Amino acid sequence: MYSLPDLEPIRDFDAIAVLTSGGDSPGMNPAVRGVVRAALNSGVQVYGIQKGYSGLVAGDLRVMTSSSVRNIVQRGGTILKSDRCEAFKDPEIRQQAAANLKNAGIGALIVIGGDGSLTGAHLLAEESDIAVIGLPGTIDNDIFGTEDTIGFDTAVNTALDAIDKIRDTASSHERYFLVEVMGRNSGFLATHVGIAAGAEMVIVPEYQVNIEELGRQLCENRRTGKGSSGIIVVAEGREPGLTYRLAQQLQQQGEDPRVCILGHIQRGGHPSGHDRVLASGLGAMAVSYLLAGYNDIMVGVSEGAILDIPLDSVIRYRKGLDPQLFELALLLHK
Image (cartoon, rainbow, N blue to C red):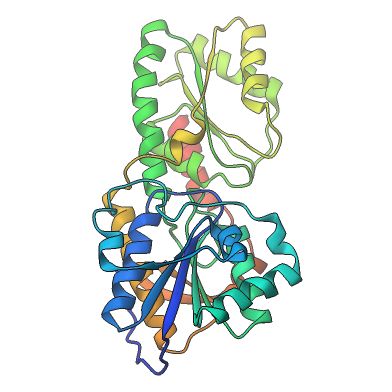
């Protein structure tokens, strides 16, 4: 378990609200449960906002009770539903959202989501007197200030389960399988999956590749018996089609590769034990931070401890892929 900060309650709230926003990630439900149970046990009423910022703007606020979050820790997705609300980029829309909270007697909001969701949380905190705290909920693990994000561990294990099955066919037919995982701007997921799966190569958006040279290298590996698994893990990247372009290059070299796009199965499924503990701890501590008078922060983890990070820093800086981790992936392929 993570070490927890010693926070002294100095502020009272009649009610707080919680929402999940952006792409869903396994573990959001345990996080919601952590928020609801911790708040109710502190004598604070909780509202669940349906469909993220869209529901906040529409005023879709529903009272949460202890039974509302019973038996949800094992469920994937989010019981509060989620949405990507482009309208929330408008300051007037954010003012309307803040007014909806105030009119309902709600003094604080906890936002569970990724980079875009946390940006909206920061703006709402800056422009209103609503106390706002964010929780990092994304399978990409690309949020600055925290070593881990809700859903990342489950997504890695989901991809591994698929690759372990694909490997049987790859070995039987002695052909390459190009397995595409999520990660438009970040290679965290691909790198962790590649190392854990014993992949022959990992391709991530942080490092440019020459498709022709890569194809020749893979074919040479096959001819010399240097290749091991036949599994190539590819992050989807910023421009679609990279995986198929590499497959075409391999075909031109005489190989018979197959492409497997894992897609949204990585977002689904039962959250792992790790994600359940992480999400539960972050959800409960978000309430503690609110009662201790904190505002405009994200609650994350570092070196085994739960800590607070200013939302301004979270959205200002980018969490880069650890070069040593990627070097390890390369080392193990050789």
